[in-house]
Structure formats: structure tokens, C-alpha cells
Image (cartoon, rainbow, N blue to C red; front, side):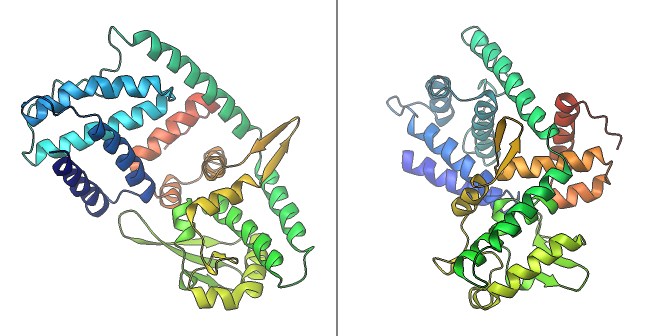
Amino acid sequence: MKDIIYNYMEDYLNFCKSDKSRSRRTLKVYRISISKYIDLLNFDENFPLENIFIASFKPYYDYLFNKGYALSTLKVKMKSIRLFLIYLESKGIISDISNLFILDNMRNSYNSEKIEFLEEKANVNKMEYTNLLNSISESDIKALIMKNFDFSNEFKYGSKKHQKFSRNVVILILSYYLGLGCDKICDLKSKDVVILDTSIVISVMSLQGIVHKLYIYDAFYISIIKKYFEITESLITEIGYFIVNMQSKNKMTEPTLNRVFRDYKFDNGSIPVKITSKFIRDLRLLHLLKNNENVYYIQQLFDYDIDTLLERVRYFEIYCGLSCNF
């Protein structure tokens, strides 16, 4: 029976990829959450499948609480299960899942104190996070890029270290200026990047399967990308991807790309701010919102659906004191 349910999970993930255009990161989260839930299902009694799901939900719920996850992580994992079960119900595999108190009824008699504690902790963490975002300006980003570009030029022209550190600066530009996530940066092919005299045109595939053209007009950023391409052109042409791993002579992987971000740090007073891809993209979004950028441009840049965009805007309005009028 468990093997059958795993097959249902694979069907659901394929559905999410093909019909819902979910990202690789989202599909990974779904797979991890649903797999653990399936592992905890109790098949000892000969119950209908929906009863097995209901009987096994509380152990899964308790397991999540005992792991000490943050409230946001808890909600994501619970939502993953809820969507999976809704899919099974839509296919007629199970019925009557309304009794499952998955995401919308997290507050109940035995966990309300835990939820209140997690909510309080989450609010403190969000305030600390957004305070850090607010403390970093666009000029701070440019200074960081300039500092690391100068560092890359200390190495012998065209050497592997020169290529590597120039590439790392380009990754930072693509993540900040164009709001690209790690998956899109890794998948960027050489043919997707057109370098002109006064601009760079980058074609990326949206989650809806539509090709969007994004533009870089900043002369400083253009000069950095041109230098990287100049010293790495033969490898880029050989591999066919724009962001390359000099050691393996292959495209960059997401774990390797994430390690690149960890090497960067803002010297924010006495606090060294560690950088992640999410932090850089949130920083870009905050700067665009502060500058009253066009909402449609933001939506295209970050590849958000309208609900996700409004959710992110609401987040910054609450924790950064912004007032966005769309």
C-alpha cells in the first residue's frame, strides 16, 4: 500500500511541475514533506485510505512540533500535505478529507501555547531580518560588487582564480539587479545572454513557460559581465552555459552557487551580515518598492504570480513600514 501512495506522490509532483509550473525548489519541499508523512502512515488497520490519513496525521503533526521547526516552516510542510490530499480527493482516490485540521486549524487545545510561542519568535526574527534589509542601501550593494571585482583583478589575467572570482561577482549582479534565483542562474545558457555595447539582454524562462527578456543598462555592471565573458568565453562556449564551474568544467549546481553567496559579507557596523540568495533578492525587492517601481516590472523580474507578489508586498509593509500604492 505504501508503494502505491508513493506512486500517487510522484503523479502529484509531475502534475505540479507540468500543470502548475512549480519551481524545482518548491517540488523538493513537497517531496520531502510528503515522503515523511507517508513514512508515518499507519497501515495496521484495514481502514479506508482517508481514515488512514486522518489517523496518521496527529503523529506527523507531533513529529513536526518536536523537530523544533520555525512557524513558517511548519506552515509550508502542513500546506504541502494539504495540497497533496486535495489532489488525491480530486482524482477520486480518497474522499471526505474535511476532518483533517491541517493548516487552517493549527490552533487547538493541545498546541495553542506552542503556536503562540512560535508566532512571537517568528515576529522577532522577521523584525531583525527586515531591520538588516533596511540598513543596506543600493550604494552598499554597488560597493560590495566593486570591492569583490577589484579583488578578482588581483589575480593573473585569465587564470582560474581570475575567472572564478569574476564569475562570483556576476552571480551577485544577476541575483540582485535581475532578481534571479539560484535555479535560473544555473540554467542560464550562453545563447540566453546577448552582450551589446550599451546593454545586456538576458532571456529567462518564466514558471508559466514564457520567455522574458531582462535588461541590464548599468555601465558598471555591464563592464563586469563583459570582463567575465572575455576571460571565460572558451569554457562558456564549450559547456553551453553562462555560469560555469571552472573545476568540474560544467554548469554550476545550486549547492555550489549557494556557497558563493556565503563568501560575501556586508560590514554593517559591528554586525557582519551573512548573505544568501534569498537575502539579496529580498534586498532588491525592498529597494524597488522604496523607489515605487512599476508593479508589472517587479512581477516579471521576480517571476511572481500576483498572489505571491501581494503577499511579499504586505510583508514589507508590515515589517519595513512601507506604503505601497498599486
